[in-house]
Structure formats: C-alpha cells, structure tokens
Length: 192
Image (cartoon, one colour):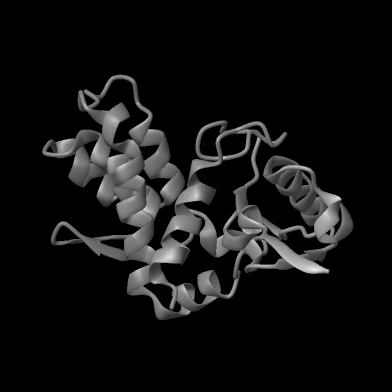
C-alpha cells in the first residue's frame, strides 16, 4: 500500500485527506486522480451541511438583511443592512437619507425599488460590493452575530426564497444565492 494522492476538492471544505490505495491500481496519474475523486464522493460520502435562512424571525434569521442590527457606515447609523443597501442606490441624493430614516427594512426595500427614483448609473457594477460592505459591518460590529456566523463552520449558507433569484436561491436552488456567498466570504474573513 502507498499514499498516492490528496483530495484537493475536499481540502477547502472538510480538511485534507490522504487516501491509501494499492500503488498498482492506476495506470496513469490521470486515472489516479479520477479514482481519488471517486473515493472522495462515493466511498467516504463526505457532504457539507446546508443552513437555510430567510425571515428574521425564523431559525438563522440573523443572516437576513432585515434582521435588526444597526450598523455604522459612512458616518451614519443604519437600522439594518437592508436600509443601507437600498439607500446606496441613491447615494448623494435626498433619497439616501429618506430611506435611512424609514421605520422598517420592508419600507426601505419598497422605497429602494421605486422606479420613479433616479437609480445611480453604476449600481449594477457596485451592488455586490455595497452588499459585502453592509454585511461585513453587521458581523464585525456585533460580536454576538460574529460568533453565530463563525459557529456555522463550513456549512453552506443559503437565502432560501422564491422571491429572489439573485440574492437568494430562487426557492428551487437555481438562483445565484449571492447573499449566501457573501456571508460565507465574510465568515472566512472574520475567522481565526
């Protein structure tokens, strides 16, 4: 028996595993790699857990942008990440402050989606970075939320909703789940 490979696909998610197989089992390096990957997913059945979230009142609801956790950005306090995100669509206008002062995150979302307001011209290019900044502020400024995020370990985080195919999973898992991906990026950045 000889150690013939390390499973790189699992290294990021579950650690590094060495696979011990007979050295005569493979004719080429490529067949060795294919066999190791086969062992990774079939023999060991290694799977990551998934955490679904959406409403602030549900389990893991603190991942929602509607979760009440004020953030301090741009020399202002924002009631929620949703307030901050929606207001940035109109940065430098009176609408920005109007949205910041709205009583609920749903009010902020409705105001941010108002087609009669002049959306900033670079919004599609910067929206992911705006979200990333708001989410980072939330989890770096609230130790209790940071702890909860880090406790998810390597779990896949998914905003599960049929209302959104970009930030969420579209309800059927086919959406981009960008909020989930940003949360996982932030988790890695804040981790040990």
